[in-house]
Image (cartoon, rainbow, N blue to C red; front, side, top):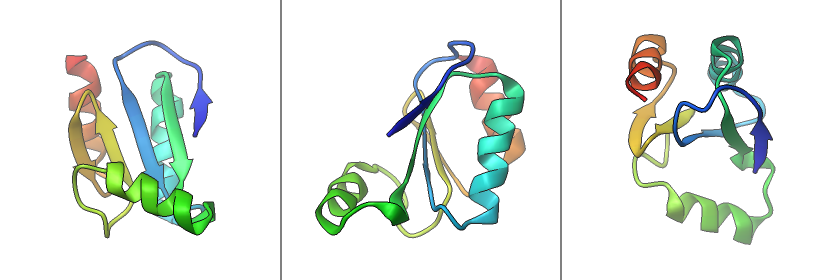
Length: 89
């Protein structure tokens, strides 16, 4: 898992795919918002590590990106929901 420094707006974790355009848009949005977050590109993990990470995700496991903000799960790129969840933090 990689860490990006920024303003602490709670616990933000992004589960992404390295080749996904929507995942890249989500990373750019979080960077532009200047928030502190962690991310992991699930598709570049080894099999056992990928299985472990996928079992930890508490929401959809078939669509990416998955953004978890203070235990609230946002599946897909949804700028408004991400901004709202961060704004409440």
